[in-house]
Image 1: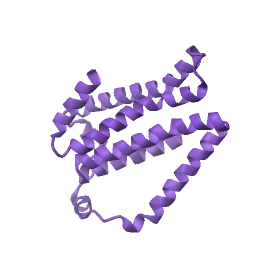
Image 2: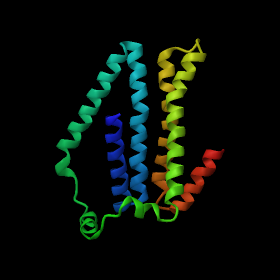
Image 3: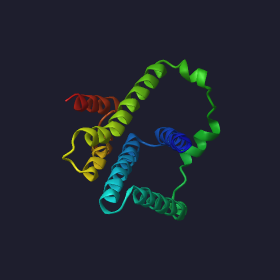
Image 4: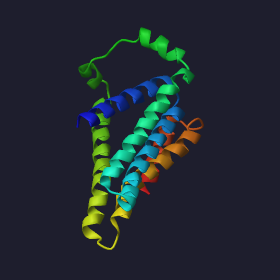
Length: 183
């Protein structure tokens, strides 16, 4: 649980930073590549179950995360400083939680956020469990990869949105996403 809380804190901080300092295009690509990771993880486990065991799946995932950390550290000198972010951070004030909750739409957004992620987590966690418990004719390696289908769809949607977001407003992109989801 502490790992999850730490990861989500970093995720929220990164989302806030990107939303404040970059275009919607960058945010869409950021979430697209989150989807790449979310697709890879269940498939690493599926491959591990096919070739080794579940311990190997966790080990391979840890090695992959270590490699990504290494690449991030050695590439630090290549990253450009965002001058806009430095100027904004010096002039902006911190706002408390209670002040934030008084902003119109924040409560509804929080409710929507928690509802969406509850549905996403339920789908991801229960898809594999459902198929493992009810479909005896499907092998466990294939079942382990089923959870990644949701993230594949999200990744594809964010990739497309990243390419078209400079032509459409945020509201139009959201409407297109809602209509696509309803279909």
